[in-house]
Image (cartoon, rainbow, N blue to C red; front, side, top):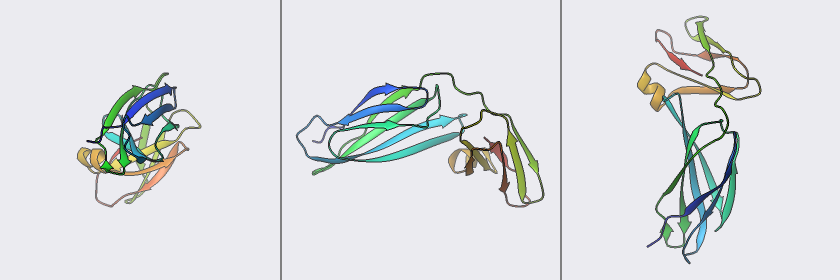
Length: 163
């Protein structure tokens, strides 16, 4: 039986998490697959995947959001096959930034100008869809460091926007 890997949180800050990965077995490990999950505004779950080579590893994930819950899952790739999943949860320190105040204005039948307020020098994600279900499961999206963006939409549809 292949055991799940051990994920140990080494440290965390407002915008990063450092963790170690190891196996408590003599089975040869070629690497790990790590997924980091987080949710914004209860509508959109995000995921970042890391492919880690080697048996033991310390990883640092940066560009995270302050005071946000993250779930880290990992499995090991071994000479006998993949291990079961292992999970750990951590909340970054600091104060979560205030939600931006979004305004969306139709420019014409296929273009919408989105603008918002918020801190500078950060990356904003703009998500849009024609229903709450689509906004949660598979929205259209774009990212920018600006405070405005023009998105192209289908004519004769109503859209929901989230930044």
